[in-house]
Length: 261
Ligand code: NAD
Image (tube, rainbow, N blue to C red; front, side, top):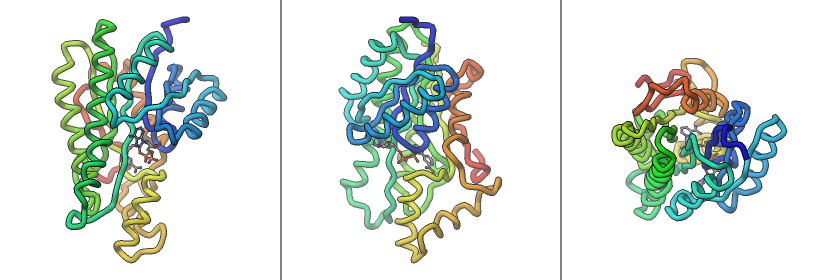
Protein backbone atom coordinates (compact mmCIF):
# COMPACT_ATOMS: atom_id res chain seq x y z
CA UNK A 1 0.00 0.00 0.00
CA UNK A 2 1.37 3.40 -0.99
CA UNK A 3 1.42 6.08 1.69
CA UNK A 4 2.13 8.80 -0.91
CA UNK A 5 -1.52 9.62 -1.55
CA UNK A 6 -2.81 12.22 0.93
CA UNK A 7 -5.70 11.11 3.12
CA UNK A 8 -8.69 13.14 4.29
CA UNK A 9 -11.61 12.36 6.58
CA UNK A 10 -14.86 14.24 5.92
CA UNK A 11 -17.66 13.87 8.49
CA UNK A 12 -21.31 14.46 7.62
CA UNK A 13 -20.36 13.46 4.07
CA UNK A 14 -23.50 11.47 3.19
CA UNK A 15 -25.13 14.55 1.68
CA UNK A 16 -25.05 18.32 1.27
CA UNK A 17 -21.87 20.33 1.83
CA UNK A 18 -19.92 17.34 3.21
CA UNK A 19 -20.70 15.34 0.07
CA UNK A 20 -19.57 18.27 -2.10
CA UNK A 21 -16.31 18.56 -0.12
CA UNK A 22 -15.64 14.81 -0.26
CA UNK A 23 -16.19 14.74 -4.03
CA UNK A 24 -13.89 17.72 -4.56
CA UNK A 25 -11.10 16.25 -2.40
CA UNK A 26 -11.48 13.00 -4.36
CA UNK A 27 -10.97 14.96 -7.59
CA UNK A 28 -7.96 16.67 -5.98
CA UNK A 29 -6.40 13.20 -5.66
CA UNK A 30 -6.84 12.54 -1.96
CA UNK A 31 -8.04 9.22 -0.55
CA UNK A 32 -11.30 10.32 1.10
CA UNK A 33 -12.77 8.63 4.17
CA UNK A 34 -16.48 9.40 3.81
CA UNK A 35 -17.97 9.33 7.32
CA UNK A 36 -21.50 9.77 8.61
CA UNK A 37 -24.05 8.32 11.06
CA UNK A 38 -25.05 4.65 10.94
CA UNK A 39 -28.48 5.72 9.59
CA UNK A 40 -26.88 7.70 6.74
CA UNK A 41 -24.84 4.88 5.22
CA UNK A 42 -26.90 4.80 1.99
CA UNK A 43 -25.77 8.39 1.39
CA UNK A 44 -22.20 7.46 2.32
CA UNK A 45 -22.27 4.76 -0.35
CA UNK A 46 -23.56 7.32 -2.91
CA UNK A 47 -20.69 9.68 -2.09
CA UNK A 48 -18.12 6.87 -2.28
CA UNK A 49 -19.52 5.74 -5.64
CA UNK A 50 -19.51 9.31 -7.03
CA UNK A 51 -15.84 9.72 -6.05
CA UNK A 52 -14.89 6.38 -7.57
CA UNK A 53 -16.79 7.11 -10.80
CA UNK A 54 -14.78 10.33 -11.12
CA UNK A 55 -11.58 8.25 -10.89
CA UNK A 56 -10.86 8.90 -7.21
CA UNK A 57 -10.40 6.73 -4.15
CA UNK A 58 -12.86 6.64 -1.25
CA UNK A 59 -13.76 4.49 1.74
CA UNK A 60 -17.04 4.66 3.66
CA UNK A 61 -17.12 4.81 7.47
CA UNK A 62 -19.55 5.16 10.36
CA UNK A 63 -19.16 7.91 12.95
CA UNK A 64 -21.25 9.69 15.54
CA UNK A 65 -19.32 12.87 16.31
CA UNK A 66 -21.05 13.22 19.70
CA UNK A 67 -19.35 9.99 20.86
CA UNK A 68 -15.64 10.44 21.54
CA UNK A 69 -14.90 6.71 21.26
CA UNK A 70 -16.57 6.69 17.84
CA UNK A 71 -14.48 9.67 16.66
CA UNK A 72 -11.25 8.08 17.96
CA UNK A 73 -12.22 4.80 16.24
CA UNK A 74 -12.73 6.65 12.94
CA UNK A 75 -9.21 8.08 13.10
CA UNK A 76 -7.77 4.66 14.06
CA UNK A 77 -9.68 3.01 11.20
CA UNK A 78 -8.27 5.62 8.80
CA UNK A 79 -4.69 5.12 9.99
CA UNK A 80 -5.07 1.36 9.54
CA UNK A 81 -6.92 1.45 6.22
CA UNK A 82 -5.07 4.34 4.52
CA UNK A 83 -1.78 4.29 6.43
CA UNK A 84 -2.01 7.87 7.75
CA UNK A 85 -4.12 11.01 8.03
CA UNK A 86 -3.36 14.39 6.41
CA UNK A 87 -6.61 16.40 6.56
CA UNK A 88 -9.62 16.26 8.90
CA UNK A 89 -12.80 18.08 7.86
CA UNK A 90 -15.15 18.39 10.85
CA UNK A 91 -18.22 19.10 8.74
CA UNK A 92 -21.08 17.31 10.55
CA UNK A 93 -23.58 19.71 12.09
CA UNK A 94 -27.25 20.19 12.91
CA UNK A 95 -29.58 23.20 12.97
CA UNK A 96 -32.81 23.86 14.78
CA UNK A 97 -35.16 26.79 14.34
CA UNK A 98 -36.80 27.93 17.57
CA UNK A 99 -37.14 31.14 19.55
CA UNK A 100 -34.91 31.39 22.61
CA UNK A 101 -38.00 31.79 24.81
CA UNK A 102 -39.31 28.40 23.69
CA UNK A 103 -36.00 26.53 23.42
CA UNK A 104 -35.88 23.47 25.69
CA UNK A 105 -32.65 22.72 27.55
CA UNK A 106 -32.54 19.25 25.94
CA UNK A 107 -32.66 20.76 22.44
CA UNK A 108 -30.08 23.41 23.37
CA UNK A 109 -27.78 20.65 24.65
CA UNK A 110 -28.28 18.57 21.49
CA UNK A 111 -27.10 21.44 19.25
CA UNK A 112 -24.03 21.97 21.47
CA UNK A 113 -23.30 18.20 21.60
CA UNK A 114 -23.05 17.90 17.81
CA UNK A 115 -21.80 21.35 16.77
CA UNK A 116 -19.37 22.13 19.61
CA UNK A 117 -18.44 19.05 21.65
CA UNK A 118 -18.40 17.00 18.44
CA UNK A 119 -16.02 19.48 16.80
CA UNK A 120 -13.79 19.38 19.90
CA UNK A 121 -13.63 15.54 19.75
CA UNK A 122 -12.79 15.66 16.03
CA UNK A 123 -10.12 18.38 16.36
CA UNK A 124 -8.50 16.58 19.33
CA UNK A 125 -8.51 13.15 17.72
CA UNK A 126 -7.04 14.52 14.48
CA UNK A 127 -4.34 16.49 16.32
CA UNK A 128 -3.32 13.47 18.42
CA UNK A 129 -2.92 11.42 15.24
CA UNK A 130 -0.95 14.20 13.51
CA UNK A 131 1.41 14.51 16.51
CA UNK A 132 1.86 10.71 16.55
CA UNK A 133 2.83 10.93 12.88
CA UNK A 134 5.50 13.55 13.69
CA UNK A 135 3.54 16.76 13.11
CA UNK A 136 2.00 18.61 10.18
CA UNK A 137 -1.60 18.14 9.06
CA UNK A 138 -4.65 20.27 8.45
CA UNK A 139 -7.79 20.53 10.56
CA UNK A 140 -10.79 22.30 9.07
CA UNK A 141 -14.10 22.95 10.83
CA UNK A 142 -17.59 23.96 9.73
CA UNK A 143 -18.49 27.41 11.01
CA UNK A 144 -21.04 29.69 9.28
CA UNK A 145 -21.90 33.33 8.63
CA UNK A 146 -23.75 33.12 11.95
CA UNK A 147 -20.33 32.81 13.63
CA UNK A 148 -20.06 36.58 12.92
CA UNK A 149 -23.69 37.73 13.17
CA UNK A 150 -26.45 35.42 14.44
CA UNK A 151 -29.74 34.71 12.71
CA UNK A 152 -32.77 35.28 14.94
CA UNK A 153 -34.59 31.98 15.67
CA UNK A 154 -31.27 30.17 15.18
CA UNK A 155 -29.79 31.35 18.51
CA UNK A 156 -28.17 28.17 19.89
CA UNK A 157 -27.02 27.20 16.38
CA UNK A 158 -25.44 30.65 15.98
CA UNK A 159 -23.78 30.38 19.40
CA UNK A 160 -22.44 26.94 18.46
CA UNK A 161 -20.82 28.33 15.31
CA UNK A 162 -19.26 31.23 17.29
CA UNK A 163 -17.83 28.48 19.51
CA UNK A 164 -16.37 26.69 16.47
CA UNK A 165 -14.66 29.96 15.50
CA UNK A 166 -13.22 30.30 19.03
CA UNK A 167 -12.12 26.68 19.25
CA UNK A 168 -10.47 27.00 15.83
CA UNK A 169 -8.44 29.99 17.02
CA UNK A 170 -7.41 28.27 20.30
CA UNK A 171 -6.45 25.02 18.54
CA UNK A 172 -4.40 26.98 15.99
CA UNK A 173 -2.53 28.65 18.87
CA UNK A 174 -1.86 25.40 20.75
CA UNK A 175 -0.91 23.19 17.81
CA UNK A 176 1.18 25.56 15.67
CA UNK A 177 4.27 24.14 17.40
CA UNK A 178 3.38 20.79 15.79
CA UNK A 179 3.01 22.46 12.37
CA UNK A 180 -0.71 21.72 12.41
CA UNK A 181 -2.93 24.38 10.83
CA UNK A 182 -6.52 24.82 12.01
CA UNK A 183 -9.07 26.83 10.04
CA UNK A 184 -12.83 26.93 9.51
CA UNK A 185 -15.15 27.72 6.61
CA UNK A 186 -18.17 29.96 6.97
CA UNK A 187 -20.83 29.22 4.36
CA UNK A 188 -23.80 31.55 3.92
CA UNK A 189 -27.06 30.14 2.54
CA UNK A 190 -26.43 26.81 0.85
CA UNK A 191 -29.37 24.99 -0.72
CA UNK A 192 -29.12 21.72 1.24
CA UNK A 193 -31.49 19.65 3.40
CA UNK A 194 -30.45 21.89 6.30
CA UNK A 195 -31.87 24.97 4.57
CA UNK A 196 -35.00 23.04 3.52
CA UNK A 197 -35.60 22.55 7.24
CA UNK A 198 -34.74 26.16 8.15
CA UNK A 199 -37.01 27.47 5.37
CA UNK A 200 -39.90 25.25 6.52
CA UNK A 201 -39.57 26.17 10.21
CA UNK A 202 -38.92 29.89 9.65
CA UNK A 203 -41.82 29.93 7.20
CA UNK A 204 -44.13 28.32 9.77
CA UNK A 205 -43.11 30.88 12.43
CA UNK A 206 -43.42 33.86 10.08
CA UNK A 207 -46.53 32.75 8.15
CA UNK A 208 -44.65 32.29 4.87
CA UNK A 209 -45.18 29.67 2.16
CA UNK A 210 -42.53 27.05 1.29
CA UNK A 211 -39.47 28.70 -0.24
CA UNK A 212 -40.39 32.25 0.85
CA UNK A 213 -38.12 32.41 3.92
CA UNK A 214 -35.20 31.20 1.82
CA UNK A 215 -36.01 33.74 -0.92
CA UNK A 216 -36.28 36.54 1.66
CA UNK A 217 -32.88 35.71 3.19
CA UNK A 218 -31.33 35.25 -0.25
CA UNK A 219 -32.01 38.94 -1.01
CA UNK A 220 -28.98 39.77 1.18
CA UNK A 221 -26.56 37.82 -1.08
CA UNK A 222 -24.47 40.37 -3.04
CA UNK A 223 -23.63 37.85 -5.74
CA UNK A 224 -27.33 37.26 -6.33
CA UNK A 225 -27.74 33.49 -6.01
CA UNK A 226 -28.12 30.88 -3.31
CA UNK A 227 -24.91 28.92 -2.71
CA UNK A 228 -24.26 25.33 -3.81
CA UNK A 229 -21.98 22.85 -1.96
CA UNK A 230 -19.25 23.26 -4.59
CA UNK A 231 -18.81 26.94 -3.61
CA UNK A 232 -17.77 25.74 -0.15
CA UNK A 233 -15.81 22.74 -1.49
CA UNK A 234 -13.58 25.07 -3.53
CA UNK A 235 -12.52 26.94 -0.39
CA UNK A 236 -12.02 23.69 1.53
CA UNK A 237 -9.91 22.35 -1.33
CA UNK A 238 -7.60 25.35 -0.88
CA UNK A 239 -7.52 24.96 2.93
CA UNK A 240 -6.66 21.27 2.46
CA UNK A 241 -3.82 21.97 0.06
CA UNK A 242 -0.26 23.18 0.63
CA UNK A 243 -1.27 26.51 -0.94
CA UNK A 244 -2.77 27.39 2.47
CA UNK A 245 0.26 26.34 4.54
CA UNK A 246 0.70 29.89 5.92
CA UNK A 247 -2.99 30.28 6.90
CA UNK A 248 -4.09 29.28 10.41
CA UNK A 249 -6.69 30.25 13.01
CA UNK A 250 -8.99 31.75 10.39
CA UNK A 251 -12.71 31.39 9.83
CA UNK A 252 -13.14 32.25 6.17
CA UNK A 253 -16.54 33.31 4.87
CA UNK A 254 -17.76 31.86 1.58
CA UNK A 255 -21.21 33.41 1.44
CA UNK A 256 -21.50 35.42 -1.78
CA UNK A 257 -21.02 38.63 0.21
CA UNK A 258 -23.74 38.51 2.89
CA UNK A 259 -21.43 39.27 5.80
CA UNK A 260 -17.98 40.85 5.99
CA UNK A 261 -15.50 39.46 8.52
P1 NAD B 1 -27.01 18.58 6.08
O1 NAD B 1 -28.03 18.53 7.16
O2 NAD B 1 -27.47 18.51 4.66
O3 NAD B 1 -25.91 17.44 6.30
C1 NAD B 1 -25.32 17.25 7.56
C2 NAD B 1 -24.76 15.84 7.64
O4 NAD B 1 -24.21 15.67 8.97
C3 NAD B 1 -25.83 14.75 7.46
O5 NAD B 1 -25.38 13.80 6.51
C4 NAD B 1 -25.97 14.15 8.85
O6 NAD B 1 -26.28 12.75 8.85
C5 NAD B 1 -24.59 14.40 9.44
N1 NAD B 1 -24.61 14.38 10.91
C6 NAD B 1 -25.51 14.98 11.74
N2 NAD B 1 -25.23 14.66 13.02
C7 NAD B 1 -24.14 13.86 13.01
C8 NAD B 1 -23.40 13.19 14.01
N3 NAD B 1 -23.73 13.27 15.31
N4 NAD B 1 -22.32 12.45 13.64
C9 NAD B 1 -21.98 12.34 12.32
N5 NAD B 1 -22.66 12.92 11.32
C10 NAD B 1 -23.74 13.68 11.67
O7 NAD B 1 -26.18 19.93 6.36
P2 NAD B 1 -25.29 20.85 5.36
O8 NAD B 1 -26.13 21.98 4.93
O9 NAD B 1 -24.61 19.99 4.37
O10 NAD B 1 -24.24 21.43 6.42
C11 NAD B 1 -22.94 20.88 6.62
C12 NAD B 1 -22.20 21.76 7.63
O11 NAD B 1 -22.14 23.11 7.13
C13 NAD B 1 -22.90 21.85 8.99
O12 NAD B 1 -21.93 21.90 10.03
C14 NAD B 1 -23.66 23.15 8.89
O13 NAD B 1 -23.93 23.70 10.17
C15 NAD B 1 -22.71 23.99 8.08
N6 NAD B 1 -23.35 25.11 7.38
C16 NAD B 1 -24.37 24.91 6.51
C17 NAD B 1 -24.96 26.01 5.87
C18 NAD B 1 -26.10 25.88 4.88
O14 NAD B 1 -26.57 26.92 4.41
N7 NAD B 1 -26.56 24.70 4.53
C19 NAD B 1 -24.49 27.30 6.15
C20 NAD B 1 -23.46 27.47 7.06
C21 NAD B 1 -22.88 26.37 7.67
